[in-house]
Image (cartoon, rainbow, N blue to C red; front, side, top):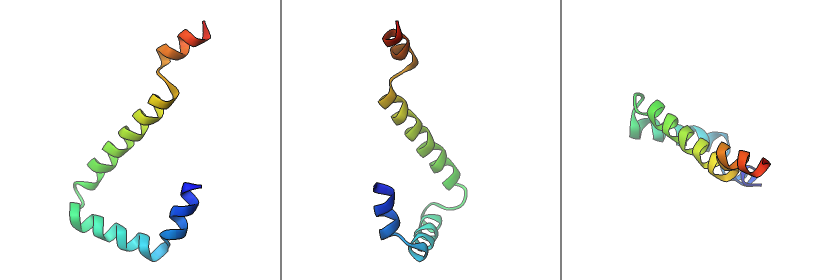
Length: 61
């Protein structure tokens, strides 16, 4: 549902303008570092929601 809302609000031209603004603010060298950190944060958040492997093993036993 959230993806539908974001897609409805941000169309093609808005996404392009947003991308250009981010590029101007952070520069080309900094963006990969930001995306890497964002990816790690999302991964940790998902792991936190699902629980760690140790918790899963304890639940199964």
